[in-house]
Length: 299
Image 1 (cartoon, one colour):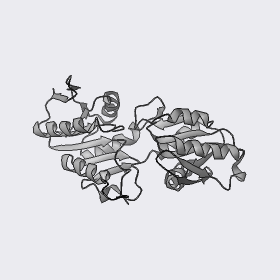
Image 2 (image 1 turned 30 degrees about the horizontal axis):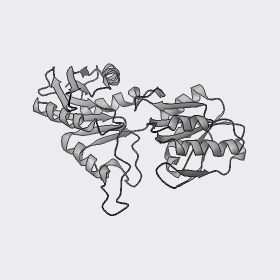
Image 3 (image 1 turned 135 degrees about the vertical axis):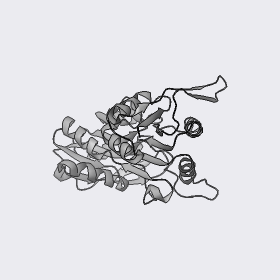
Image 4 (image 1 turned 90 degrees about the horizontal axis):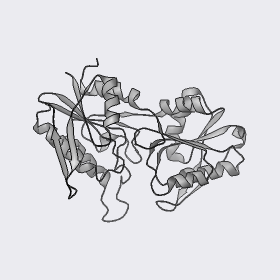
């Protein structure tokens, strides 16, 4: 069975690269908005009896979610026999508990929507904090990949004598994985959060790596506050100006300015999000897993 790919608007080139790598067929479709902002979808190619994957990089997800669910419904109506979702960035993982009375646990709600519309899911480094795995909230088979080898390769190519640094304890899993690929030294700083955009980072045990170039590694750059604070701590400790490599570059608000002001010289992230800094390609990692979980034939 040959896999077919349906790209959400903005992800056509990403889906085309995935099609090239997997031998899948890229479906022709018209997805746009009416003047009143509502979505219009039309599928130009047949999918009756086919295995189909929707390719959707879901950063800033709210405008994309209706199109995602409409696309899933349309593909089912047109006869797709198996329907998967390739979402390199998986949103709605932040709210994983009810911290105040009356709060919506949106991670579970979004997982329910996806699980009811799709048969499988492939994603990269989801922000698992209180959930032990995606299986805790997603009821469909999922394949969770990591960008650590690709980040390690980027560091090896672009940074001389690096030390891999995590801005907080949550980043340790990524820092350790990246550092272990090439046997690099690594450190993890400590963070205290005072709000969505205000944090304080402290460091320790940095003397032994003072002659190395720090590369701050994390899964997400959103407001940039945590990474900027980490860079400040490293600078005050006498280390060289930092570079930064993150999996998902969301860059909300004035994140880029914060990072520049903190003295971070280079920012790199994976292409899970469509931004200028997306210089680390995920397709070679995604392609074989998409083929395997979909049951498609790789040509």
